Image (cartoon, rainbow, N blue to C red; front, side, top):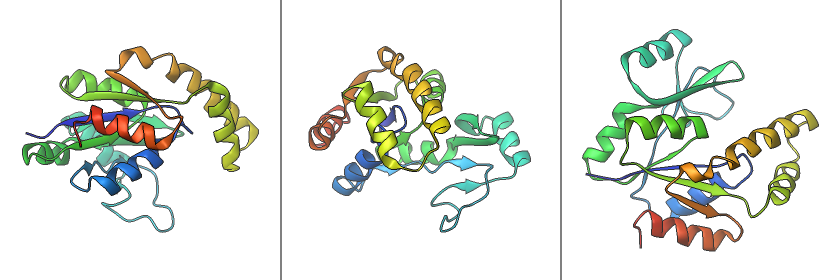
Length: 182
C-alpha cells in the first residue's frame, strides 16, 4: 500500500515549485490530477492539466462520493477524484495531493492515515513580497490573497508537520524526510 501525502499552504508560498523539484528527484511519486468545472485554458489538456467536467457531472461525483475533497472558488468547482488516488495507493505508489486548506481538512476526515504537511513562508512580509513579485494580480486580488493567507497560516497547528520554505533546497530535504524518501 502506498502512502498519501497532502501538501497545503497559502498562495505564493512555493508549493508548485517545491512539488516540481520533488517530482524531478522522485519520479515514482504520483500527483493527483484535479477535476474542475472551469473551461480549459490555452494549452491545458484533459486528464493532464485537469479533468474538465460540466457542473452536472461534477455535482454527480460529489453525490456519489467520487471526490476525496472539493471546493468552489470564483464560481468554479475543483476536486480530487477518489478512484485514481485509491488505485495508485493500492499499486504501492506514493501519492501527493497539492490542495487548499479546506480540501486538506476534508481529506483528513476521509483518509485519516494521510500525512498532512503545511508549507509556510519564513514571514508574512516575505509572502506578501512573493505575491506582489509575480506581477499578475490586481491590488484587490493581492489583498484577497493576503487575507486568505492569514487564515491559512493560523491553521498550521492542524497539520502533522510544518515546512518553512525559506531556502528551497532545505525545504525540499525536509519534505523528502517527512515523506520517507531518501
